[in-house]
Amino acid sequence: MQVSVETLSDLERRVTVQVPAERLAKEIQDRLQSLSRRVKVDGFRPGKVPFKLVKRLYGDQVRYEAVSELMQNSLHEALTAEKLNPLGGPRIEPKRLEDGQDLEYCATFEVLPQFEPTGFDTIKVERPSAEVAEPDVDRMLDNLRQQRVTWSAAERPAIEGDRVRIDFEGTIDGESFAGGKGDNVEVILGKGAMLKDFENQLIGVRPDSEVEFDLTFPESYQAAQIAGKTARFKVRARTVEEPRLPEVDETFAASFDVKENGVEGLKRSLRENMERELRDGIKAAIKRQVMQGLLDANPIPVPKVLVENEIEHLSKQLHFPADNKDEKTRQLKAQLFEPEARRRVALGLLISRLAEAQEIKVDNQRVRNFLETMASTYQEPDEVVRWYEQTPRALDNVRAMVLEDQIVDWLLERAQVTEKASTFAEIMTPDPQPTEAVRQE
Image 1 (tube, rainbow, N blue to C red):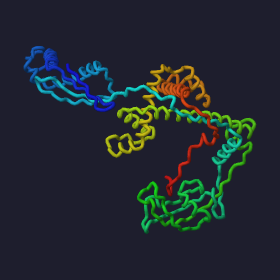
Image 2 (cartoon, rainbow, N blue to C red):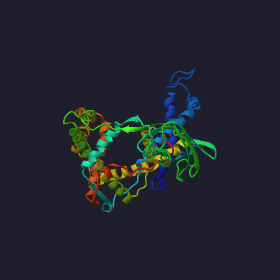
Image 3 (spheres, rainbow, N blue to C red):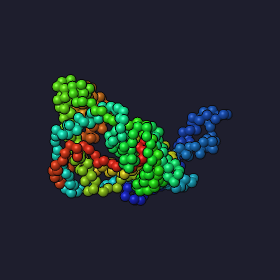
Image 4 (tube, rainbow, N blue to C red):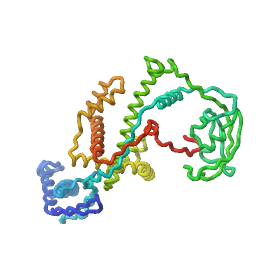
């Protein structure tokens, strides 16, 4: 058997296999002889069917089966001999299948990249340091009050913070447009659910009043067909309501299942939760920087098949349609998920190789500590820990996260780390994204 290997790209290989005609002929002959001993043909006793008749009746089928199995077996032999480990199923293309000729075919596939992680001392990390201050607790308390807000009718002009229910209709050059009309739409002024210029026009409206105004959409507006254009809006305000926040008292504290020390007990519980969230937030911020630094220091090629698998995984998490036969669906998935998929695949390869090269094994005690800490937030923590220990897939996910944490610790020992003073709000609040829609669905 002859085998040749071509390198088509960094990760793509083509293996050409040529199997001697004698081997294929013997395989076909052996199969036909075996079949002749057990095949049933009218007019002949079992085992007495003439070989030529068996060959004429079943020759094509036997040849197909022999070629298929011989391709499978010979490819395995070739890959083992060449020390190649394909990712996913190889794409096989027959080159020669004529009677009496050698069996020849090509198998094309991807392999894992070969690399050694490096550049650990070039990774730069700013380690944020912060504490939960009293104003942070007060703001969290105010957030809880906002969650329990009630609304009452306001017989006055609307101000920021009010809730206004409106009907609106917009036209551009006298024509309606998609998204330009709404009935009984609830708008809390100042929340940014609609374009700022739109909300500003609602300041001062009274219940059961109407207002008209022009609004120019931003050039970067998400609906390209109306970006930069000016629309004329007619708005009818149905109601204006003002918020009423609950008092922070014993009743308010009890509503959050605080059974002791009333308001002070609620504040203490909030502080404990916030301190845990802050620790997790600092850990996450450091991990993001370390992982990005590792990626930047090690730009490696990533196999397409692994990226495609990760795209599918990400799309399923967001309940995206699973139809891969539709070209538009595939393109949209790639547009939405490919950058993150490539990042995850690259990090997975880097972490795996780094753990292997540095002989970093999962610390079982850290796994146990992780489970107990996570389970402590549930009513029956022992049951949670037991469930994970009895569910292999879930436990494997936890072990993978712990290994990542160990890798981060190992890299931090070699990275350039500086301290950065920060605050709870800076660490826990993501950068706000401006809203550029008349109406957010």
